Length: 276
Ligand SMILES: C[S@@+](CC[C@H](N)C(=O)[O-])C[C@H]1O[C@@H](n2cnc3c(N)ncnc32)[C@H](O)[C@@H]1O
Image 1 (tube, rainbow, N blue to C red):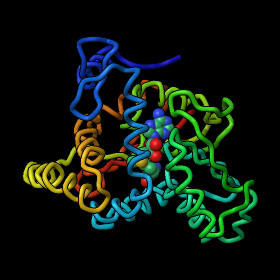
Image 2 (image 1 turned 90 degrees about the vertical axis):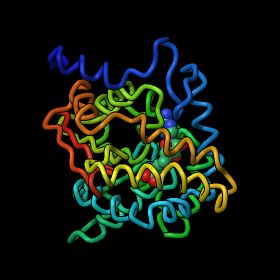
Image 3 (image 1 turned 180 degrees about the vertical axis):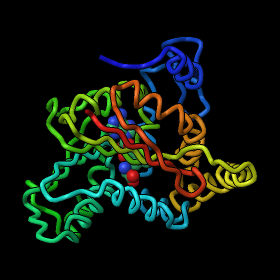
Image 4 (image 1 turned 45 degrees about the vertical axis):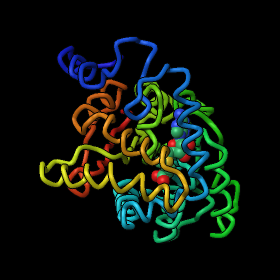
C-alpha cells in the first residue's frame, strides 16, 4: 500500500503538471499528444546513436564519465548481484558495473549479471559493438534487451538492483517507469537514478543555461550533423522535476529510505531508494 501525505502528492502534481489536456505531454518545450512522444524520443536516439558517446564527452568535457563512476561507486555492487540497467543505451553503466566488480576480491564474474534494457535498437547495437570490443561477450553475464521502461519485459521481483542513467526524463510517464522499477525489484532491492537536475547556485545556473541553449545545439550540428536532438536534450533537462519533487515521486512509487546526492552543484543528482 502506498504511503504518502496529500500535501506531498499535491506538490508532485503541481510541480510536474505541464499540460491542460490530460492526453498531452511535453517533448522538450513542445506540447505533444502522449501517444506521439515515444516515437519522437525514439527518433532522437536513433539519429544520435552513432555519435552518442563522442557527443557526451564533448558536451560535458568528459565530466559525464566522473558522474557515472560516482554512480557505480554509490551502488557499490558486490559479486552475486543481478542488475537491470534501464534506458541503458550504449552500455556506459553496464560496463562500469562489470569493471567495478572486477576490482573486488574473488569477483567470480559468472555469479553476477547485468541486463541492459532500452527501447531503441540503434542504441543497443552501439552498446553490443562496444561489448564485443571490450570482451564482454558472455551472455550469462551481459544481456541486451529491447523494452520500454514503462512496461518492462522483466519478471516481477526478479532483480536485486535497478539503475537508470539519463533515461527517465525521456519516458512519457515517469510514474509508470517508477512503478515498473518497484515491480521488478526483489524485496530489499535498490533503485538508483542518475539524471540532470536543478543547479543550486543562481549564477552557475545562468551560465549553465546560457551554455546549454547556445552552445550544445551548435555542437550537435557541427559534430553529429544534428541540431534538433540536442535542442531536445537541453529542453528535456529543464522540464525534468527538481531534486525534491523527484524524491517525492520515488517515495510515492513505494520506495523507502529515499535520498539524493547532488553532483557538480546539482547539474546532476543521484537518487536512491529501497524496496523494503
Ligand atoms: C541519454 S540516453 C542514456 C544512455 C545511458 N543510460 C547513459 O547513461 O549514457 C537515454 C536512453 O534512454 C532510452 N529511452 C528513452 N525512452 C525510453 C523508454 N521509454 N524505455 C527505455 N528506454 C528509453 C533511449 O533510447 C536512450 O538510449
